[in-house]
Image 1 (cartoon, rainbow, N blue to C red):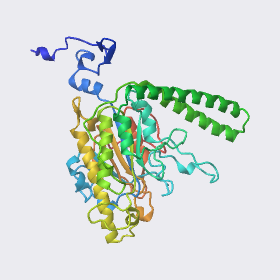
Image 2 (cartoon, rainbow, N blue to C red):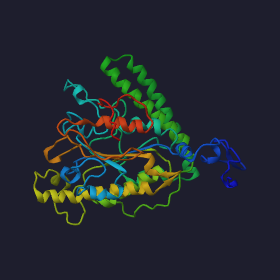
Image 3 (cartoon, helix red, strand yellow):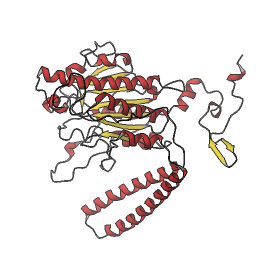
Image 4 (cartoon, helix red, strand yellow):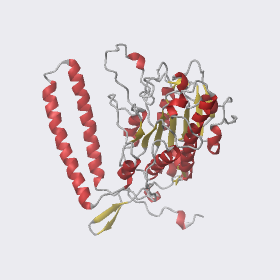
Length: 431
């Protein structure tokens, strides 16, 4: 016999409100709003959104310390994978995978787009990138959140790109991102923000009308540029509409305090720990479901034992054992922070599982061997997301599997049906 506490005695509308005088508060999605008879697993699926986190780095990882020799879940952990041992079974390392025919000059720009750079035959022509994985996924996953996607961190080359090949700027300041997500202004500040957004919209309308008039008097190349401008205006309008709709809604309160002194680029552990905490809070509060975090080179790393001039110098080690050991200090710190992030997602409960269950995490870098400027055999790790993780999947290190095939698999796992992405030639099936 069922306990009365377990029976669905009332079915509520998803639009049900709590009313207090003139104030109405929308309810979150409750079990009572789901159809009777759904099993616990089905209810969990109904209430758990899919999420995507991309972590992009330059300068690669030292391959002999990263890739295991054996494939499958029973691999013998390498020096670097020892640092992720507590999450074995929740991630897959890929070897023999890359964006084919990339050079180190274009590899960072194309890391998450997979654009076929070989299609650019005329060196004098404008090089236009493709859409990056985060921007492609955002319209599907981020429709119900305050921020469709987040682009954070810093790199000299952009990693996030729109469908028209326009780079999306990163937010390099953790404090600014934290305030954007979790700090609400006063009623007066909110009203001023709404007025500012309305004024911004009117400016866009004026610019669009002027651009249309101008376009009719231009040649084809210039009309293409104007078309690109139109697209940027439309995207800006959509952002304005979204921001205005959320402007009067309170931001979530989180039990987290920013450090008094924000970490510098060289403070690897502190900086990456803070960024990962902000990403985790954004997912946990459902402020966004898509995030791209750029963690670039760190300069003169503030780590015990690090005495070299810079991260860049030791990445170009020329097989010098002393430089390789210095490089390992930085890369071990980075992988410890990645492991901590995965553990935090696993410890954050939701519905009948945890945050890592519904979050596809892809950590990738544009170089397989920074010392040789090689963009082949990239160190790529995929975690969470409900994949059938295999520990280590290895492809031909001389004839790599297209990385875009993995991206296509990730999109399908997120429930986004598409036939291709970037320079994909198919979809991987191992996970």
